Amino acid sequence: MYDLETREHALALVAGGRSLNSVSKQTGISRAAIRAWRTRLEPLPRIGPQSAPCPRCRAVPGPPEDPAAYAYLLGLYLGDGCISDHPRGGHVLRIACADAWPGLIDACRDAVLAVRPEGSVCVLQKQGCVAVTSYGRHWTCLFPQHGPGRKHKRRTALEDWQQAIVDAYPWEFIRGLIHSDGCRITNWTTRLVGGEKKRYEYPRYFFTNKSDDIRGLFGKALDLVGVEWTTLARGSDPLNISVARKASVALMDLHVGPKY
Image (cartoon, rainbow, N blue to C red; front, top):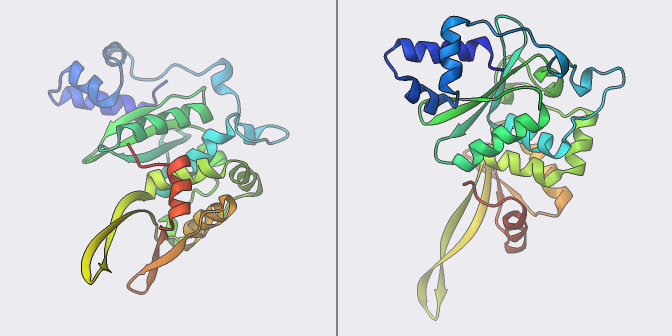
């Protein structure tokens, strides 16, 4: 089920002169649904399993049903995600994904639906990126790191149940962080070989985030899987984490790999 904001956005595009076909391709919403919203904009009340509380709201709180997908989504959220209040109640989770990586967009959508299978996901086109968007009343339960202001200006720490998931699925968490705020590049330098300067290239992973806490979570996860890393500063700010040693890059290639 699509939230009211998503419905209004799609109808606004049609009202602006766009065809149903182009709006459907941009948003991922069927033309039939958009046509139906012209008659009834308000979503029907949720019943059955869709109104069930999240695992954190049960009498005995537990982890999400798919903890591996949650670990990946947690990494995406800490990197490029946000949660905002919906004017009609509940919350909207948004994960920004660059247009250049369609595989990442699909992986993000799959993770959202795996964590909240009773919900829905839509993709809203922005300039140079899309916002993978999902409405729900329990996103702040699942991501208690939500708060006012930018992440790097407030404390970010995992709760015990989240840390237990990351400890069990560290590579999924690392992959989510790399897919949001990281990259795999080919670095180069020069060496003297037989008195002649020659170019030498090698692969390298970078993770860039202004938050000391989030970089700390990334480094802790790398330690857990045996990846060696160093911190690089931009000016006086320790902004980047680098993975450059051959064995560690091989591990990252095996479990993470470049975006696609």
